Image (cartoon, one colour):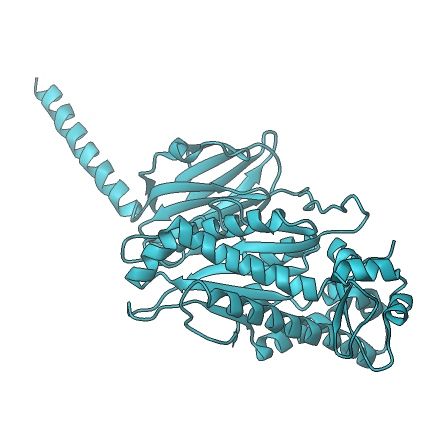
Length: 439
């Protein structure tokens, strides 16, 4: 009996010692896991109570990613996060070599390019460990020519934030990432209804796209314009109204300097003269050509931004009545005209309600679409359907007759009269004539 009592006491003491040892070793804990699937990658986020101390390695046959969290215990329900993700098949624990270390194993569908990094607390989130799995053989975004052999004008639309990055959060709990996606989807639908225009959604669901990746995807789609949709916020609830932002001159110049120094690698970022810029041994020529492209892109961005301001003021308040220049990562491209549109202040309760309203979202999208349509009707890129079919105009000068104008544009007098609803061949000085397409 005495022996049994001693054994029982030792067992209790061992249990207490083990619990104490575990507590000492496990100063951190994994509280939750979230998975954000995207077309080209999957992001896995582990939420912890402290900054993670971790190591990782990969195993083959089958493909696995093994992560050791030092001085940590796991409180997360690991498999609850996996839904329809095609890349992560299973998350499980395994025995680690070091005491107090939690080993997690991600069983993967195939071999991926892996990026792992910690994130400091921000907003509603505590410390995190982020794992990005990128497809090694990602497919380029498809573009197409229309039935007339002329290409569409491509507009890349970026819905701001996404995934574990909610953006700003309104007083009523509205997430910026959800508002931006809804407006972006409505804008894409309007653009795709117009013959000769094509929208490409850089983010089509609730996932995060890195800023550099946004411009890469826009470039893959051969975008003629990039529009980034956001909702503004401030520490006070008073500010309101929409704004349109373009890249600051200093940021554009610094990006251009970096690219031109490595022009053999980055020639595709510098437009049609890229091959000349890449291969020329004349550094001054390379800089001159690249600078011309950069200046054209910045001027085009500002021109389009003015079109957006003009249309937005018809449907909502404006915070800034002219385009504003700021240093923004998403607008850094030297080859794609780019704007960022702040659709309103989500931190303002009245605007938060409007931004949540589907009708208001549609009005904002319609205003941006009209700006796109108007801008490209006036400035269609060569080789596009809109450039081939747009209505040209001619102002009649002294000494010109209807037959002279018809001969100049290689159209018939009958076509000119029909396009302009003319009942006779008489035209007046200063009269603007629409020039139809030649037969």
